[in-house]
Image 1 (cartoon, helix red, strand yellow):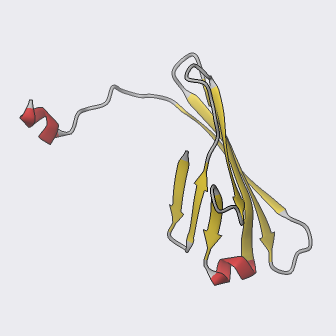
Image 2: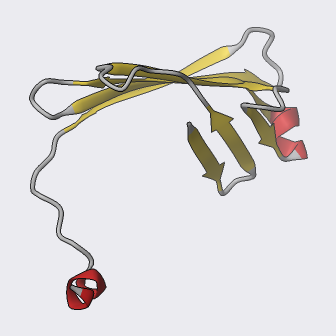
Length: 106
């Protein structure tokens, strides 16, 4: 499950299923779905309505992970949906450092 809150006035809850040992997962949210959906302000519904959200995450053997994020929008004044796509690969650069307060408690 992924929850998103975008400061311009939009929230989404996306969900999907994957096995514990899966190397890939896909999460989806759709406008109007009350379980895993998208809710926007009146202005965004009018001018840049988000109809669907999908993120595919792939975990690579070298410890990196990649994602492709598809958002389908209906832009005011256009008759066809607009597909906005983001993609990236993230690499671990160092081991995590524990919170100093946690270290003090130990």
